[in-house]
Length: 333
Image (tube, rainbow, N blue to C red; front, top):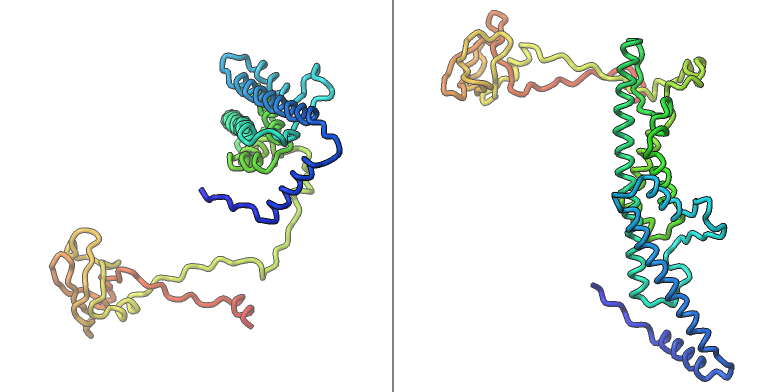
């Protein structure tokens, strides 16, 4: 841990001057009012800590009915119909308690962070359940459509058409958790939510409730719009170059070249087991024969032009350069 640098001399002198002015001031200082303000902030911090621990203890109970847990979350958000009208949702647990000691503030901050950790984990569990349910329902509906109309192709995973997500009981929890996680946050709370994966969960929800490509509101003329693509921007795929011919392969077979059996091979298993590689040990003769020693130890001569047959080919056949197209030539000009 890096030690904190001591305050500067000017800062120490400034604080000492303020203390002396406060002690030696002729104006009356209400010490009782200061004590009550400090006591009030301490009570406020303790009440917030008890409220956070009570909220976490209640929502994490597995024996509660889902409606009870949902009511607790709505009460935390101040959305109950019988809630006071002056309910205040604090954006930060340390708001309006600047006189509380550092230790109590750290404990309150740690408990506050546990709330957001629970929110992210609970939202993740519900979103995964919703996604699995939507995928299963979508797959079943797609199979039924394919039986009724084989030409129907619907690969868009969107639950808006069938109200899948809206009809699920856990959609109420998802909505409440989204409201809880998207309220006003401080810097540390926002960093905790983002690092916990809140943005990815929101993207998954948007994908599940997103628009469908097969919506009937889209007019046919909108689907038939033609988009122009300039020829300069279009990349034409090049045709693969043809393989090297027999005479070209024969001209490349020098002493030491690695070869394997070619298209006209008829000599059985002389090259040994697969891949059956060998090395050229003699130059190509005028009679169209070339001598090769295989890795299994056997040596023999093979046709590379004799009777217009080519028994061998290179292990790694080089690809000849493709001719430049007219469009490339025009661009260079």
